[in-house]
Image (tube, rainbow, N blue to C red; front, side, top):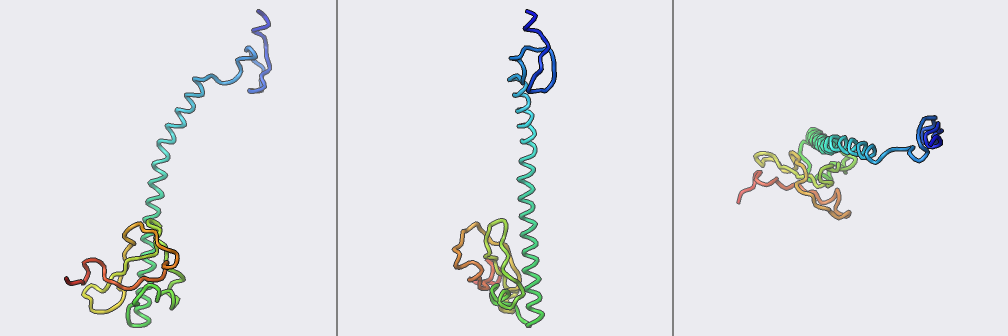
Length: 155
């Protein structure tokens, strides 16, 4: 009986204590409690993280639209007219390339004509409307100025 309850040096916890050599380690209930606590913390952290990434994408989208609007304004002040296509902003080096919308992953920004339709060209820009995977050959290419739905079009 004395041999069962002797001082034992445990390799797992690296200290000498009173125990049976076979009882060193964690019990199943201790492990379950730790896993439950980790799961509880993850249920609090993961939704916050996912929401934060969506907010960041929206902010990048707003900044990209502001950059496009700034390029449109500079083009108008330099040439006296609005560009006919977004590609014209890239050709004349007002932009290095059309920015990609982080929400949809597209570079097909919606061109908006002047409010009364008095001047031709792209007056403003809207975000890409839907998640549509576009072919690589049309990326940053075919973006002609068409009025936005309901803006200046007569049936």
